[in-house]
Image (cartoon, rainbow, N blue to C red; front, side, top):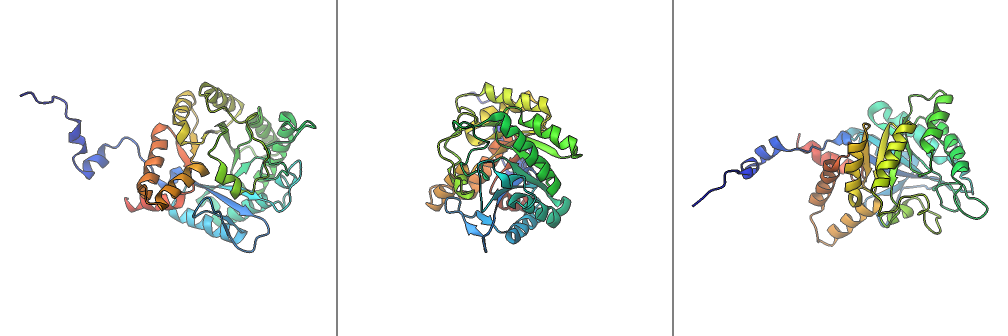
Length: 327
């Protein structure tokens, strides 16, 4: 009787051995918490399609940021939900606009314990829900939108954001914002480019979270789900324009793109575990169909294994707590 020469199972024989030889590791500082703050509400509002996630008041947002810092999470990404919207998203660069006020409040609350980050896109602030300024015919005007992004970036940096998440998928957005920041003396402000952001079905709960006014879709500026090489091209272009970090979004449906982008650029690569990914796990676990904690941990580890240096996830604080239990 012959026996195997190679016995990989030797390295799986106990928890201690498996821990010692594990190739991919996840720590709390690699997690970023997305958080929503809504103008004009007296108390936090639960988001029905995202159990456990809520629209915050300024006070509850401060507490959430402090909790994230205590958990060892690396950063918090802020999204604003204004009370009033208009065609050009005037609230986006208004110093008294909800997102800028929230950035200042969180920065004052947590200091350097968290990297305070702000979403730089017009969709939450426009009455049509698109990520840019519209032409008279109703299409998104790329170059007019860049002017709005530049003003928005300066306002966010002035409010105290250390990192700006450019999520609008306009051509030239990184260069436009970088130039505006440098011209205003914010050369240390970090730019995260959502380089490979795909149009698709996984953003539905997010639209509830930001009370989206969108009619139609964003397929003329977000990427086609069938295109992988284009995602690499977008990331390379953003690095050339001055991006400090690049993003792939969503995460799980695009792990191949994430791996390819990681191989193509020499800056940090992040991934966003989006609202639809969160909602699917929560719904399945609520029905008893999957092991909730196991599915969350496995999904995060898979994103890391594909090449993400950090992950935006709504489970950031909870997952950080699990990770710290093992230390």
